[in-house]
Length: 361
Ligand code: GDP
Ligand code: MN
Image 1 (cartoon, rainbow, N blue to C red):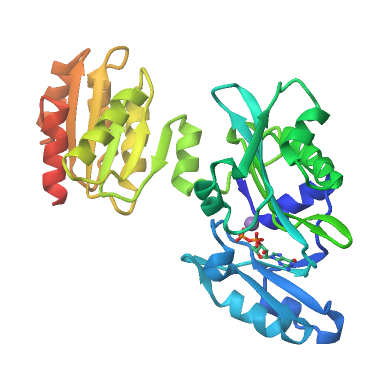
Image 2: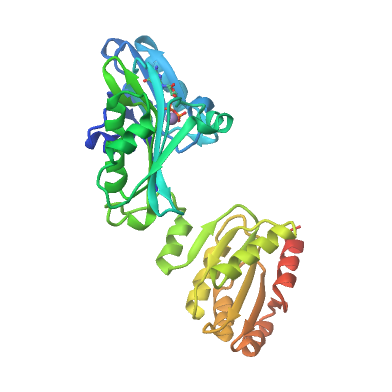
């Protein structure tokens, strides 16, 4: 789950990383205080989960006389289509230099990896493309509780020693918060020392419980519902609902939809041995995706029994057409049940997908 900047900054501060003084506002009215109470210069930052926020107009500068007016402008805007519900007003730092640091996991090496660039800031992507050696990286054993000093020196090059210390503190956050990503861009030097001017933290969804996070905000209501049933479910924006069993078969169905020029509305893997009730929940869930015009059910009966699948589809009573391809255990009986109710069945996944693409135009 992605945290917003102000949340990530609190965790960074707990590890001793310096963050600018600031206040969070979720309503324009909350900040209508006289200009004399504001610092001379501030940065006003939309708290939205959007990459390239600064370039998209989500980070505004103001002096103390213009705080309220600038904040109002930001509250009334959308950043890359996302409405601004919270803003962070911070004392503006006197930035001397912007660095980039990011910690993630190198899945090939099965180790944490730290990326560092002397030239951080909003153009980091371009910098990384243009200059191959602009970003240095080190990885090390996950059993170490600190980044080894020699690696910090190698990583940070000529940057001041306090930068190295901050990188190590960021690594502590990364470990303690079960993060998949902990990033500061820019990590800045100022006359008062080193500060995290921005903050990014993504918590591993598998660890939300342990982190005391009850609700994964990144999931849609339907994705959360699916989690309860134990379905692997991802909502997308096409019009063809997909239900399969096994990640491979379901992915192959998505690929085929794309191949024939259609757009999938979801990925739903009911898992092995699904009974009629499970299938019913799956069909209802997918039918509830607003963009769905037709549902493709592509199931292979192994331990899953196709007659159970048929009963589930019938019980769901989806308001959109359901096109079925079932094969394997008890397929005959399943087909009989479905054809009694007038469901369309085709023999191969190629045919069901083609048909669904046709239906959705
Ligand atoms: P992002 O676009 O979402 O990554 O937003 P950032 O929080 O990184 O801000 C974008 C840019 O605004 C930074 O790279 C800085 O150049 C600038 N910026 C942010 N905070 C400050 C600040 O306190 N002082 C100054 N001078 N510039 C800032
Ligand atoms: Mn940034």
